[in-house]
Every structure is written in C-alpha cells, then in structure tokens.
Image (cartoon, rainbow, N blue to C red):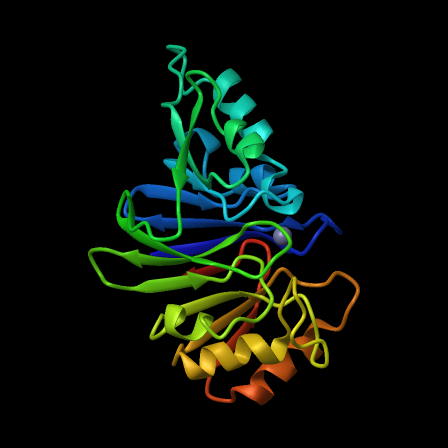
Length: 248
Ligand code: ZN
C-alpha cells in the first residue's frame, strides 16, 4: 500500500502546510484518513477528490475534520466529466460517540456516515481495519490497517497520550505513524505523546519504521527526531512532511 502525507501539523496549519490528513492507496482504491485543515488542496495534487473511495475519521477535533464540509461541497458541485456525471456517494467512517458530529457526515446523495465501534473488524475496499480507543479529551480511535492481499500493516495512533495497549495493538506492524506533539520530558501527558513514548512503542512492538506526525509548529524537529532515534536506535525514524510518499 502507498501512504501519502497530506497534512501533519498538530492543531493548526502554518507556512502553507496543513493538519492531519493521510491518503492510503492500494491498487486503484483511495482511502483518506482524517481531513484536517488544507487537506483538500493538498489532496488535489495527488488525486481528484471525486476519485476518493472512502474517508475515515479518527475523531472530531477540528484539526482532523476541518475539510470534511468542503469535501462534501466538492463532491456535490464538481462534475466528473462533460456529461455532468456526479461522483458516487462517499462513505465516511466515524465513531458514534458524538452523535452531533457523526450526523454531519451524511449529506443527502453526496456522503453517507458509517459508524464504527471499538471491536469492529472493518473491511474497507482492500483494507481490513481494527481500532483501539486512545487517551484524548474526546473519544478517538487509533487504527490498524492491513492490506488484505499482502498482509502489510500500518498503525496510526491518531491523537493520544501514551497507553501501554499501543504495544500489543501495534505488534509487528510495518510502519507506525505516531502522534509526536511533545519533546522528551512531557511523558504521561493525557492528550499527546512524546518522541520517547512513540519510539518506545516502535521498539517494543518491533516496528522497523516510525513516522513522527502531529508535529509542533515552532520547534526544533531535528531534535524531536534525534530523541526518538536515541530511544530506539534500530528504528528508521522519519519526520512527516507534506507530499511525502511511503510505500508500505
Ligand atoms: Zn485531537
């Protein structure tokens, strides 16, 4: 499968780069994971938004859903071709622990909200997806995405403070995409993880590649990366970057 980073800042966009959004592709199937601020314009460089097959949301914080409304308008107003063909109804997967936000995922004939819950094993096109509830001020789910025909696995922590359950949940994944909003010294925070905590998950779960994301805007990101490498020297550590493509 192919992972393309569309946005990776935590909280707010800056310097022409946006917040959480990731395009996951396998064959000709295109799954968007989270739709943060500036994600739609970043997506357009890689894929016509009308060609998306599904959107999955980890939680309803604004930096993960800011562009959901404009994605709905895009699919309502833009046409596939000169014959005025519309895009198909887009499934948007989200949890149902916030009914007000979940209800906004459905727009008549344009998008359809599809609920998931923690014990589900969801088949989304070529992917099998399982969930883990994270430590965050609002209900939020980490996802383990397996490409069914290859068995390759991506784990995305979504937003979370450190939880030991991340280790069994992430075990033997090929890539860990992890919320690394904080530097060493901020461990055991209840909202986000540090460079040390995400590296510990990669090390304990035997994951060869770690991508640091949900990054702080005004900080020395090379230091953040160095801290992670120091904690888990055998792990390849990568800073998320707009348009970065990782083949998993
Ligand atoms: Zn959040």
